[in-house]
Length: 278
Image (cartoon, rainbow, N blue to C red; front, side):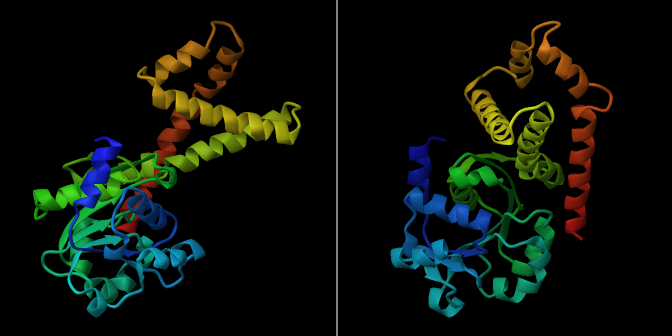
């Protein structure tokens, strides 16, 4: 779906949309909606501690902390709360939903069954990631059986405003999705952090090492984004036999290297995502 088709899809959404939770991820989604042409006057935001940026959107027509009575019927509720506070907010969330309300959750670990129990409605469970803040996110979504085609299209348009969207049929996959793409940006930032630290250990000034690490990670990510070649091919293109890169990769790809570490890391994050559902 192109940017223009996403814009058209958002503009064609009818009914009131309520965003519950306008922190980093919720705020990024809201910014994406407005940038893609969603009518601000049809959006209500529930956020007890709004940032100055969110508060300023009132001038554009956003309704901040409205009551259910002020909004009337809500067509779509997007839940962007921390999963630990989800059930405590249950009564508030339920007050905005009816039998036909589409409920889109971006909470890690929160299952479709738990969301249905707390909110009711027709549930889409989704996992975005923080590059959504610059329109380069990736979201994976799964729909409950009672979500119809038009509701799925609404959810897709709302999620696609911050990047690409993939749909799966099996909810069991969502814990691993959370571990790979949901948590994944932190792994990349850690790579930049540790690459800079290693540069300092090798004798580089800290400022230069940080700049080299950041630009290398960012540039390599952009190259990966633009190229159709597999990541393994791009890696091989940098690696001359017997050269400096090969020497470093012998360490990184060794028995205790990145493969082992990332396998364990993704397994730990997957396990934690399952625990959050309890």
